[in-house]
Figure 1 (spheres, rainbow, N blue to C red):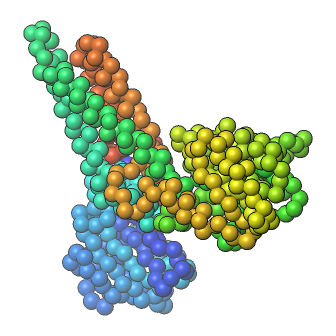
Figure 2: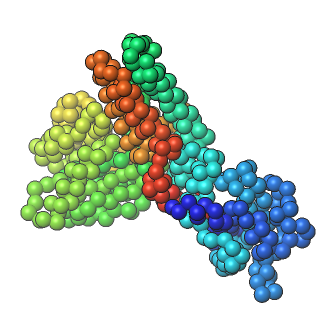
Length: 470
């Protein structure tokens, strides 16, 4: 973004017109209050002369006719969201009214705000660091109590404080090594090597913990991916509908009905789950169906939880072949397998429990097995409870710092690699300048999360995903 654009006074709706009783139009910039005075006729006084953090009543006219009666909230720099003089105009939530007011504001000297420009100005003016600025969007988009709690912790600066502490450690270590370079001829060591190794190990350990938390953070933000897999006509789509309590997926007796993935989200126990119904697994010469089956295996590999649906009315050898195939593709170090013995309602008292438990043996006792009937709803509530239990680490009660942002994850991963290189260099007795360079790289990547060393192109990509009024 052209830096001169930050000298402009900008305006945009901060709420969605027509969806409530009022719409809020935000104005920010050096001339914000003067522009508002050109558009709003106040019963007494002006916005420019009003004390900070006050609300004034006025009327907006166009060609002598009243457009709307409004309330104007006045904020003065630096005590505003953007750190600039700002005003928020509350009008009735008619799309016509809000568009007319915006048109009058533009005629009076403002320009429409770019996506995320208010928050970007807050970042530039030091009201928020970059991690906090990104958390603004996460708060707005949060869908569960747990994701909101994590986003609010980041917005309040808890996550940033953690990173700043790590950076201070790195700066201290780097400065001691660089001081040695100034006295290289005297062969003086200011940094105690064993102590330095201990500091690097402790810092690396904290970075690794943050990096590993991304798996949970990503699930909090986007939903825990749950793949529903199994043979054709085993009841996968019926199970999805039963979980959602809605006829979301097409159900048919015709084999191969589902040829592509169907995804829906559902909040259970304050945790967002993303259920993925997949194409039935079987040998087929249909090229389109094979594409769907390939996608099923891919979604299976990406899921945190795999729901393997078996049809109890089918011969045991068929189910054994299906579950053997699924088990071979599950990573039990990172995935949970739930074997669902479906259509139990068709068998009555004829369920062979011993045969059922053979499937668990195939899975190496690293799975959960239960009987369900997706058609009648038998076992569905128990399944939901098991899903919640499987992700209890994502509950809203956790105050642990969790990484939810892919950009942050990549920066932390690079910082970790730089620290590993610094540790190896130090342990090998390499010169101080080489160790210091690795530490500087680690510090650089941590600083990029906070926005202390971030270029304009990256900032543009971050803020373009914001809504216009934020």
